[in-house]
Length: 386
Image 1 (spheres, rainbow, N blue to C red):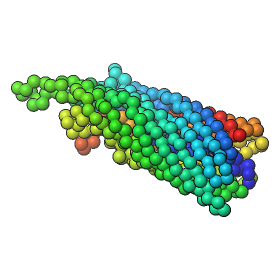
Image 2: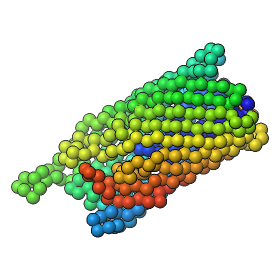
Image 3: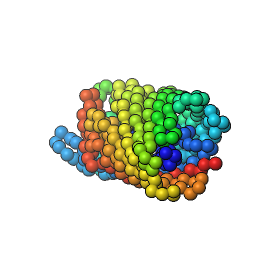
Image 4: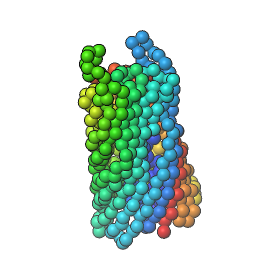
């Protein structure tokens, strides 16, 4: 069942990615290139165009329209895998797993207008794999370097006296690790791999700016710049587990899928000055689990196709205004062209994003209502085996 095994090599583009998954996730941190046969080089590109909009929620009912709040983004990736001998191999993978581009336009939402977030990251992962002799099992482990920066602004009536607050952090590079196990049976195109990704602690210097705050309300004390300052800020990108699997159903047909769990509840952004004034941070997220299942078929020696579906269960519909999605359902179609050592994979994804209510306060109170959100994604990957 060799053909099904090789078909699986072209499916990592569609079986392991994310289109606006939980938190600020943009890719799934899967290790597809590590399991390619022989030496392998890969370049990939993706473009995602999301749409989310709704209306303000006030004590008097629906209010102003929010306008479109999610920005399009591009992602690029690079991977190189070296096979040293029958037991040892290694891979270097560059990707952009986390990010956010959001703006509630001024002139739209009265409750959240002017609120924005811009986060970007680049990860470089080095991983080594050892295949145990006379055994279907292998182990892998590695180091991940993450370079991240970002900025947040809050605006609108929902934020009360802190409307106009902003916080930014410069680039920080921090390190984490990963480890996992795998099982393979190449003659039927079967493989299962499980990988743990550790949390990564970024230690930033946060620059905060905001409006003057009157500490005693209308009392005699003057308004003070309590939100202005610079202080240390630790932000932890969360730990996660990735389970990926595939198996040949026939010599030309492959079943594949994945399960990814992410500990988003540990992801906090709590700048010092904002916390002192309000007793709250900027985000409060729920853990996410994303399931993917797909099937691929080789039509001839050059052309293959695949379809996959993904599902992420919706949680509490009261979400952070800075991460205004709540679960998703998506479908991906892919075409794979093989010419000798070159494999080109193209894919298109449509994702229906769950309805959500951006909320603030304790207990959380909805300040907007988003319905009918969705995203389109396209991607292309070129792999070369040698």
